[in-house]
Image (tube, rainbow, N blue to C red):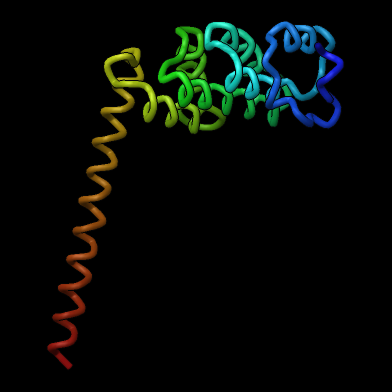
Length: 155
């Protein structure tokens, strides 16, 4: 029932569990829709929450839009999967900005074999970059240690 939700303050919206309440809030132009879709991601089936999360990802308010992307990350964490629409919206947004954490959650909590091709490539690319960065940092440490030893011997 929509009257039990405090749309003005956002209090309790993370417990929302009825997609029709969120649909009605979209029609009324409520302000806390990003928060509400986080609630749907926690409390509803992925197939019910997904279209509302995607719709909230298109909101003009950057804060609520950010919460909608958080909802996508929550959906990936709680379900171990996303819908094709959510994958496509994350891909369109790209790995920077609003979608960055949602993409990281997706790559962490969705099995590799279940990822769409773009996400598989992104995961491989990220793993290679992280490995190279680790090697670079370790080599910097080794060179720094060697340099300190050499400078210490000259004194």
